[in-house]
Amino acid sequence: MKLWVLLGLLLALPVSGQEWPRQKPVQLVIGFAPGATTDTVARLAAAKLQDALGQAFVAENRPGAGGNVATQHVKRAAPDGYTLLVTSVAYAVNPSLYASAGYDALKDFRRPRSTSRTCPSSPPRRSARRSPATPRSRVPRCRRRCRR
Image (cartoon, rainbow, N blue to C red; front, top):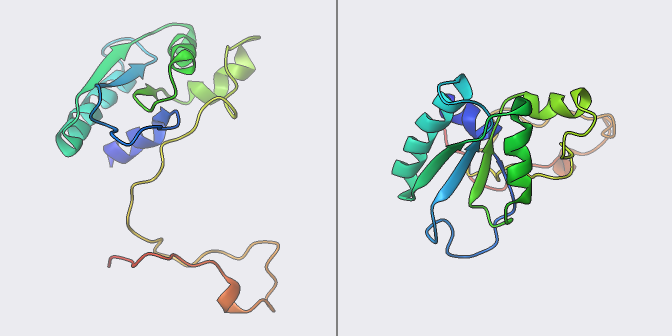
């Protein structure tokens, strides 16, 4: 469960390269001081990811300005997928607190793509665009086989 929470917090830049992740170590940039909750969770997840992928993960703390220092560092990094940001809710809040946070929370970053191979356990909910008269065949479904 904690691993999924961390993966939700990781923000990755687009990956470009077919040899990923083995070309060089993946750098986890943590926006808070060593020993903070975010740091602890990031280091635990880095160990699990290292075991699962066989790739080196290096954790680097860049505290300051409520996580803005680390966020700006990751924004300036090459968009190769080897630099990941580990932050907290401060990522979404800081642009409204600081006159110039140095990043746009909606445009400057992408979240990692899902690696899950399971389908949603419940069917998609009806949206305002789908009327009851719409045939069930037009409702989007998971194209992969679901694991039970």
